[in-house]
Length: 570
Image (cartoon, rainbow, N blue to C red):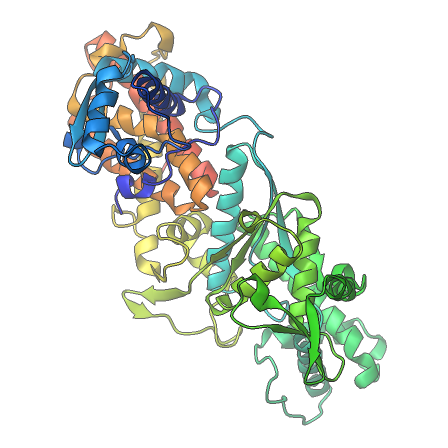
């Protein structure tokens, strides 16, 4: 996907960022459009969106504001566009404005202004593209939350990359973000885990017992069983039904410990790990939820069970809360957990696997029933990963069971390659992950291509130091010397970065940042190959050093949002 497609629909800002040059471009353009509309006696729209055209001939920024207003003011959109151009005040960034097609406004920026904008990018440094902390809403993101019945797998690695990057991007836009991992350590799966461990323990004691049909098959449980026995005096503690709780708790603790370590190695640290048993069920939150729904008149009895009137809030059918045998459903516990997640935030975002599509409307219905605005609850469905080697499916891990573990993946390709590759496609699209491609040192490997851009720039400044030359004072550099088309294209891409990040935050799409970095690298590498940065012309050298320094800064800022390193040597 092109940068234009990645940015499109997301260029409205969450707020002006400190030192945010790209943000100021669209802010200034928006103010100019609003001024022109008022001068023409027309009402400004509630929201004014900008996009980056696919073709340079269509300008640097474009808006369909005239077409948006046409219906409400009952005027032809092209006529409205021409009125806007007529009344548009002089704006320093703007060279010219053209009306295109049925009424698009295409804005062309002045090269001199663009070149001068590099100073503010350099001055902003690490904060370029970010807004001031605390200006956005409080958000809680729950992601990964794999059942504590085995090691994390490849799709969990994808969810971890998406969730952690989304948290970083939202924080950069002023949101107060907390991340959460839900440990599903109650119910039927917990009992199956305990029984699976019990069989492994009995086998290690020499008993000839078969695994139950629904038991977890992974050999990792043998290690847990061996460690459990090593901690029991003489290995002779009796087994049986009275021991299932203890065995289950032991297994969960060991598996969760392993999940924490793998995630930590992957650069993901959760703010809170929530136990279903301790925080939800033991606190009797599901029962409180059911009592409140009943008090609201939103439950009824049928077929011996208690039902929630989910259809009253947009779900396709009503849902059971208490089964006919008196047992709580998982749904009741899930409602309780989601309300628990809202305990101190304005918005909750879930990252779910592809088998949870039907789960979304039912939880959304309950949040509406409890008075949460529709926009306060969001769900991202993370699709599956097809793991390949030279285009062929990778065989499954024998020790883990019928899957490849996240730990194995990281061990083979590294954290940076894994995280960046997972973010090269939308989270809701299946992903082909070829192990050979992501470890290749070539332009075919997206993370290598972007990181190499940063390393090349670092080598330029290392060369400068080796020649005992000082970096110039950026505010004294003549940036108007950056007049080559390639140089202006690079600068304009840099100016788009703050809007790009804001758009990624608004759309909850961290892959936009990965797309942007790839396209920025595609502009930089040919420029680097064709033009000397350090040359005989000192003024031009200083100007080009400013440009590449700004490119390196933006690449570094973008990679940090994705949780990927920016190496200085490769």
